Structures are given as structure tokens and as C-alpha cells.
Image (cartoon, one colour):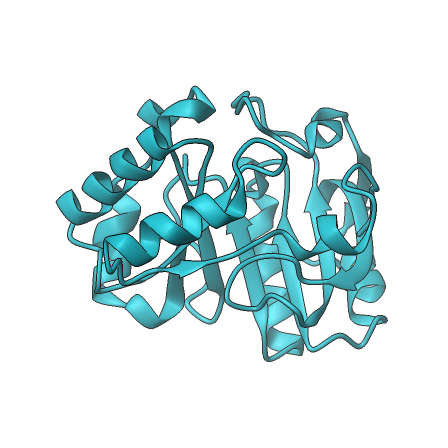
Length: 220
């Protein structure tokens, strides 16, 4: 794909990575506009706005200028825009650590294999669990080092559902799994106690950026 191709961008910014196994690292973020899936606890609803059209060249110039240890393409839902695949490949040509964070509704089989994919699994409280893309689990089992799965839970019912769901798809203990509480809805201590109680081979995360800055702050 030509680097003159355009994508609709919500924002490009530099911050501390707040989630995933890369939490804590300075990171350049490219947030693409558009989603439409309507997760109940979405914290980036502003990414539904049309955004600004930018070429891949322009996006890369802005993102790489931060000289960050990692670059993440996120959304919205970044895979809704076909140009995202070209952007990811172009970034991989210029940077050693490129991350993709996706809502888990769309297959990631076309994503450049140099990209580390962070894939959401939506629990019942999200209201969209029926849209989880099971094809991604099969792909991840073949190349587990390229993928991690993130599950945000709002209750113990969510947690128990997620535990059964990932075991049923064969990824528990095979792929990196990260659980996090819905900010402001579930006390982190409770999630920690459930994971310890069940000896679950999974990590726990908090959204660091929401503790460092006001949780409603954009561009962090």
C-alpha cells in the first residue's frame, strides 16, 4: 500500500502505556477514528467522531517524532479502516516495537506478523460479547508470542464467564491473558482475590493512565 493512502485519525499523542504487558513504558499512540460496536463501558467514545484524514506518511512522521520505545495503533476500532494494515507494516519497517490494540470483533489474520497484537475479549457486561471473533484464538495458539488477550470485567459473574470462555477456547495457560477491572465499577482488590483464589494463570492490570491523570483526560 502506498504511504500516500489516508486514514481517519482521532488523535496522535505520547504518554505512559497504561495497559497490557507493556504497561509503564513511554509510548506513542495513534488512535484511529470509528468503531460503532457500542461497548457499555467504552472510555473513548469521542473516537466515534469523524477524525482528521491523514496520510500514512503524515501519521508516521508525527508518531515517530516522539522517539518512544513503542508505538501503538488503537481506536476506536483500528481494523475497520483497511489502510490500517499498511500503516502497521510501514511502522514495522521503521520501528522495532509496534503494538495493535483491537476490540476483538474482527480477525487479525491480515496484520503484519511483526506486530504484537493486544486483543480484547468482551465479557457479558459489555453488551457485545456475542461479537467476539473466535478465529483469533486459533491464530494465537499457533503463534502465542505475537498475541495477548485483555479481558475487562465489571463483576464476579463476568470473571467466571471469562474464565470458562478462555478455557473452552484452549487459550488459558497457552496465551498471555490479562484481566482488568472496569474503572470505577469493580474494586481492584476483588479481582485480585478471585485470581488468587482460583490460581488462575493470568495477569492483572490497572489502567495506569487513569491513576496518573484525571480518568477523563484525553491524550494520555
